[in-house]
Image (cartoon, rainbow, N blue to C red; front, side):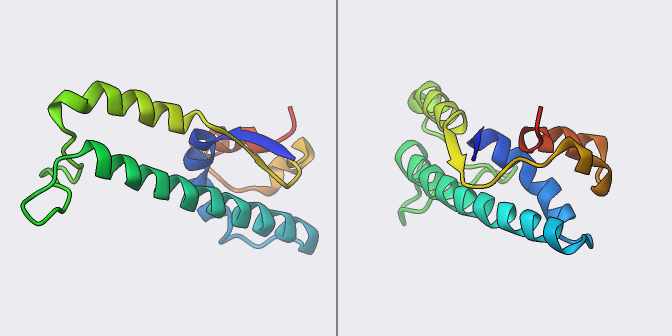
Length: 127
């Protein structure tokens, strides 16, 4: 059982996408696929909760659609920015338990990822 924050999961998702494209021996491939499946469930739940927050705290146009800024971000209501940031950061820090085992540190050499990606994966390896 792994206990990690949603933020850890989101940060690791890019690295897991890279890893999922690499070949591994059977048992390790199974463990990676199983973990990726569990992480995807948590990402879907996070995205659903994030959408609820956006609907509550963001400006909407005359059609009730979220106002999207030029940079692609949504426009948060000016009087709600601090509250949104507090609630959103709390969501990111939410810890979840995933029903898989951490990877043994002996397996680190099996993964071909950048140092930045490995840093995002550290929560999924034994200490």
